[in-house]
Length: 556
Image (cartoon, rainbow, N blue to C red; front, side):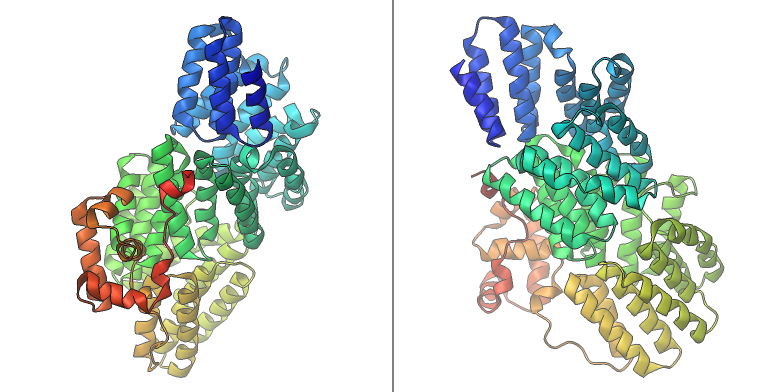
C-alpha cells in the first residue's frame, strides 16, 4: 500500500517514470492477482506518459497474465492503442477504437473519448481530414465531463475546426490549453499539446507562440528526465521551425529520430522524417537528404514516397539540376496516381522545374491546382500561386505584378524560406530581362533571408545569381555556413574530441561515412585535417554549439 501511494504521489508530481517503477514494485509484493493487475495497468499508463513504450508493453503483458479481464477494460485498452500508434500501426489502432466506440460509447463516454483521442492526435498531422470526424466524436462524448477530460476534448475539437476551415471556432476552442497545462503539467500533457495546439498555432501563422509553448513544455520534460515524452515535442519543433530556422529544424528532427529508435516509438516520427527530408534538401545537404529519403522510400507507403520524391526534386532544384528535378516529380506523379492527395504541396517546385527546362505549358497546367490551394489555405499558398504565375508570365511587367502579390502574401507569414524563394525567382527574372540593378536588390534580399534561416543551398544559388548580375558576395559570411547540416554536426563532434568511431556510434552511421563527411568538411573549409579544423574552431564559436543534444544528456 505504501509503494502504491508513493506511485500515485509521483504521478501527481509529474514524475511518471518513478510512478511506473513504484507501481511495478507494489504489484510484485501483492498476492492478490486482481490488485496486481490493477497496479500493473497503472504502472503501464505511467510508463507511457514518460515515453517508456517497451516497459509499458511489458507491464501490460504482465497484467494480462495476472488478470485478463482487467486488461479488457478501456483504460488498459488505451495503453494497447497507444502502443500500436507508437509502433506506427495507426490503421490497426483506428480499427480498435472504432469498434470500442460502438461497444462502449454510450455506457462509458469519457473513457471512449480518451481512446478516440489517441488516434485523432497522430492523424491531425498525417491525415487531417480523416482526423476531423474523430475530433468531433471526442467532443461529443466528453464535452460535459468537466475537468481535464473536457479540456483535452475541447482542444482536440478546436484543431478539427481549423482543419474544416472554421478559424473562429478553432481559436475559441484551442484557447483553453493553458488551463489544461496548469491542471495536468507539462510531462502529462506535453505530447498532446505538441501534437495539437502547437501544430494549430504553426499552421495559423502563430509560430512565435508555438515555439514559446514548446520551450516551456520541453524544459519541464527534460527536468523530469522523461526522455521518451520528448519525441512528440521534438517532432513538433522540427516542423514548426521549418521556414524560421532550418538549423533548429534539422537538429530537432534528427534528435527525434534517435530518441524514437531508442525508446521504441518509431511510429511517432513520420512527420519528423518528412520534414527532415525537405529541410535537408533546402539546406542542400545531399548526403542527409539521400539518407532520409531512403528511409521514407523503404516503408513502401505512398505518402512517404510523395514526400521523398518532393524532397529529392527540391534538392535537384537547389543544386541547379532541373532535368533531374522533373524526373523526380514524374516518378512522384506515377506513384501518387496523378493527383496529389498528400499534405505535401510540391506543385510550386514542380512548376519551377518545368519552367527551367522550357516546358512552360506543363507549368501552366499546374496553376489551377495552386489556385485551389490559395483559396483554401491562406497566405503561404497564395504566395506560391502568385510566384508560379510570375514564372509563366509572358512579359516582365506581368511577372513583376505577380511577384509583388506573392511578396505581399508571404509577408503575413513567418516562412523566410518561401519569402527568399520569391526574391530569388524575381531577381532571376529581372536579370534575364536585362534589369540588373533591380535584380541585384532582389537577389541581395534573397541572400539575406536564406542566410538568416540557414537555407545554405538556396543561399549559394542566390549568391551565384547575384554575381552574374554584377553583385558582390557577402564577405561577412561565416565559413561554417559552407557546411551542410550533417557536416556541421560531425565537425562539432570532432572539435569536441570525438573519434570517427565515436561519431559513427552517436549518429548511427558507419565510420566510413564519418570519414567521407569530415573529408568534405576539410575540403570546404580549406583546412588540413583535424588539426586545421581545431585551429579554425578556436576562432569560430559556432563550433561550440552542438547541432543535436546527445542522447545521454537528455536522461542524466
